[in-house]
Amino acid sequence: MIKFADMFCGGGLGARGAVMAGCQPVAAVDAWNIAGATYKDNFPSANVIVDSIENVDPVQATRGEQIDLLLTSPECTNHSIAKGACQSALKNDPPSASNFDPPQPVNLSRYSWF
Image (cartoon, rainbow, N blue to C red; front, side, top):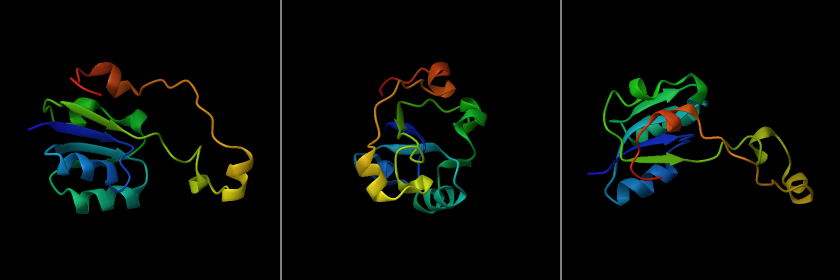
């Protein structure tokens, strides 16, 4: 079975697709407590961490388990209405692609597939 870690997990919509494909969530990280609680309700066996990703130790998050897949979603507060912008403001100033530096856990891991 393919085991995965889910960064910026939200409530687990992306994880649900992975689970439907036969994968198992091992760890999940999100800074919002409501998202973390929702994820934990959806995937009780996952180690859900509610904290900023910069504060997460990947080995502790995964409890030392080998991870085969890293699910990542971009944080939403800087390119969506989650930061409080109205939808019309986003239409006038759409989000643009920027350089993406992977979080430290990606640099420290040996994931076999992204």
